[in-house]
Image (cartoon, rainbow, N blue to C red; front, side):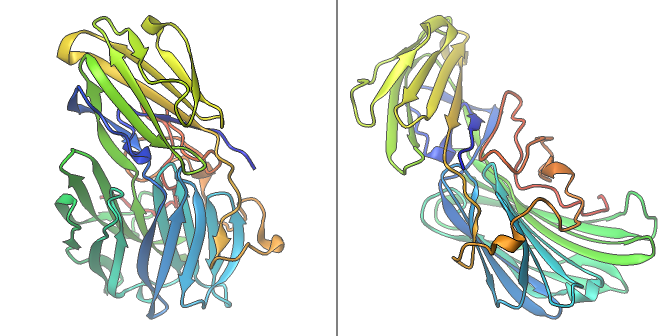
Length: 374
């Protein structure tokens, strides 16, 4: 299956963007997905820890989900989403990865089923090859959820871990409901940031209690590219090959591609310099570059469109059983997965790889409707 993915980024580090001859302005930061990689989420379910390993592709789409121990049964699979349940049907796990973001959500009928120590996340935040880890505890205090202060152990390339302690709130629709949320924000020396959010909710629907724990990892946020002069974009194409575009930005926003179109991988250039240029690779990927302004305040805009094939994710490295391949039938009130819990009002969907636009309206990890607010 072939899906189009539009990524708008003034600095596209998710595809290993490199910038030369320009000044990064964090005031106008933008999102970008990360290079294909894996994260490991550990949460408690029914009194025992389970680990969910999430693997994503170059375009940020979900490629594989491993669950250990394998006490859960896969109940639904579609592009960028897999759902699991226990045999009794009283607990479920939903895994999403989209637009460079990832999320794991666990549900049960009792908060005690989800409480425990040794919860955490581990993964390569910025694609350096080294893992950062976060650990925390979830407690059931007289039916109220609490989250201990998360402990961050950063990799060498992560220069900052900003931990926001848990905030307790109440359910929007149920005065008897409650929630707790915490977060850890990562940064590197280049100014890129990424956030891990943890949320626990307890509420009642039609007299039936439901407890929810969700961990979501946002896509990468990188500062914008500014300034006239020479710039370089380097990215990974769908087949894993590395592509490089050298270009110049002149006062007034004129863009000129200086790379040799015959270089490998080969490309063609269309467009007028003052209106931006479009670089098209033979394999279908496109990069549109435009700019406006003068001097050091000139702002560069990149739109990277990938047309990567997207298949159903494998489950424990095995293709899903055809009987569970369907639409969204797990009853978790996804609402089209149109929000990503990172506060940026993305309005994306599960089907589109990594998508963005001006204002960065692209989903992140999907929404699981963890009720309650801080």
